[in-house]
Length: 309
Image 1 (cartoon, one colour):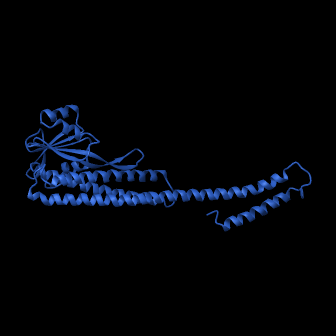
Image 2 (image 1 turned 45 degrees about the vertical axis):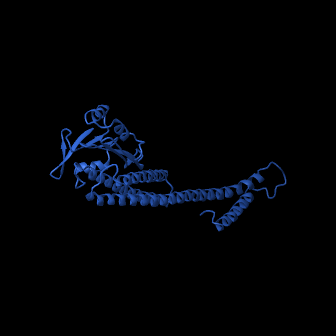
């Protein structure tokens, strides 16, 4: 899908076709649209294909008059079992003398917010500032999802207070994996941003310095939060493992105690059930009395050692 936007009178307006100074938004492009980007807009075919590669790492490079930036964008996924996980997908940004192009294999909340007008001060003709605005929104989206992960992990942790549920355990494992994705992507994005801040690949202007510093601060904060939440969640997983072991030990302890109590009358009646002569007091009530008394004594001993708690 191809969409064209341009800032007119401080407002982002959608255009019917491309024109100089516009923003070209590319989402899940077809093969025909990819060919259009390369042949009509003159985009580098390698940059276009790299933007759609899900394994592409965050980086920045320049080829002739085109600047190519790949950044990882956080993405929320909910499967059929209502398990929430967070991944990252690459967002390719190609800056040419005429166009500002964003390419992604899926719709992202960051780009949707810009299109909806949630983000202010968007000027498509100021390409460097537009790039920094996108990077800043990506960092803020990382922070938002990290807070969601923290709240979700706390909710799952509370479910282990009374019982251990497989759904909660699977959710915690998914969140732990999400933090690994976030940590790796954030550090890669930070490296790309630092390369951008040197001003060798893309020209930086004085009025963009504050925006650049804000973006760096947001990424550093996201990296720190990712590390903190990862450590907390790792400790939570260890605690969950201990809870599971304790619950299993408690169940096994009760089952063992019940087995002992059931074994006592079995042994007594087995003794009196032998087909031999000379058994003491061979009447039905005697082995019953012995079994009951012995079982009561064993029960008292087991309760003294708290075997039923």
